[in-house]
Length: 236
Length: 303
Image (cartoon, rainbow over all chains, first blue to last red; front, side, top):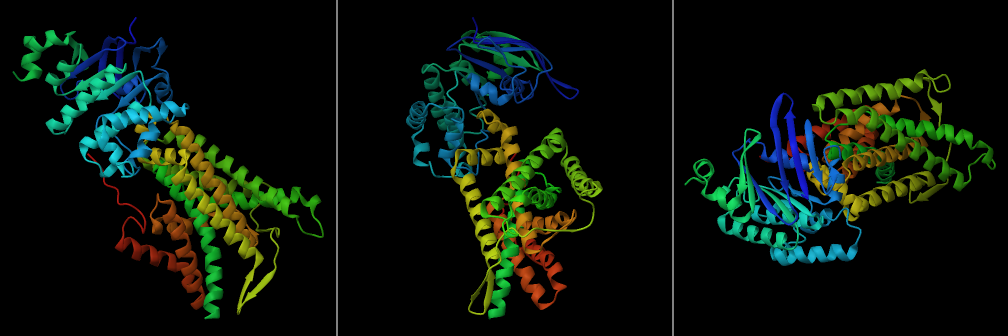
């Protein structure tokens, strides 16, 4: 039984169809990737799963619950943590306040502490800067904070939107090491990446999105050597 | 010198009224980026409802005065009533327009303001004529040097300051305050943290309207005459105070309120006509030096 099941999803912004009938699924513990060019509809799919955007038709089922009619803040409570494109940290709040906001729905104080420790063990730099305003962090640190905040929500599924965007290669490496650690701790991951090489390297399966529909899907290892994917996305 | 100190007392007293009202403008702007043109009318509703609640409690009067706990009950119920009205206005008039162009909600707010002024005016038991405000606070005079301070003034200033300090503490220190600040920075990201942003916005309107009611009761206790239009010009002045201090900033609203109240009284003491214009002069000067207001942050739109 799939943990997340998206069926025939259609999303429009006014008259413009952004997602035109997309179906895919994700199993417990998996990392799957959505790749594709700018404007292919990747971010829209994530935003619809987490409830920030309403779908036109189709269904999204997560742990046996229908999400398309559920308000965004309740979807978080079901266990979906979305790290949006461009990080969206609360710039005027401190690092610690940002992390604590991630635990808004967490009533178990011990669990909150435990998650905070996990975040600091993954990203020691955040612990050094707990009293600093999030807006003054570097891009890489903001991405770490956005991931840390998602860990604090204690989600079972993490939606990652372009975690490598605009970051130096060495920072990207550090971020992805920790994404793999998060996955090993039992969190499933749905990843969007412009950097298709990277996305296919860390995921088990992947879907290629073009103009709002899935054109290619399969095991990531196979897609890495697929001629169509290579020509269009891998720059080989 | 004594005259100056005497006027300073009046200034601080008027300043606390402006500051309490400016807080609502600032908080609402901070969280939904809209200027609630009807906010001043919450002050009038607060004062007006206090009159009627006080009438309802007139049976409790002892020697023509309300006992302390009745005064407290009158003020609190007027504040709660006005607060609920604030929540209702947001739900009915502003929420449906939240994702529309800002001009829509601005015009709606002007409409709400007209409604709040003219609906009570049309009610036969309220009407357009000013009505006297009951004396809720004791009027004992103290002489400090040559300066006369009344107990009403002391109560009013002290309670206002307590309200402001508690609000600031709630917003800066509590979990709920962090949610308010989070929503004001980024609504989508707040939803992704599991924050019920609609609820946070409702509470912000509640707090704003409650403080407006308090400022209305305090203002009417100094100048004991209430009519349905009082919220309009007091609202304009407090809005100026909020902009002077930096709209969106709580401490800015407080600072702006006191600056405006004190300078207005001092200017009036020189020439009674000067008082009306002085707010605008300060506004222009401050905006020339700091376009975002004294404590406001210049917003940088990120790409």
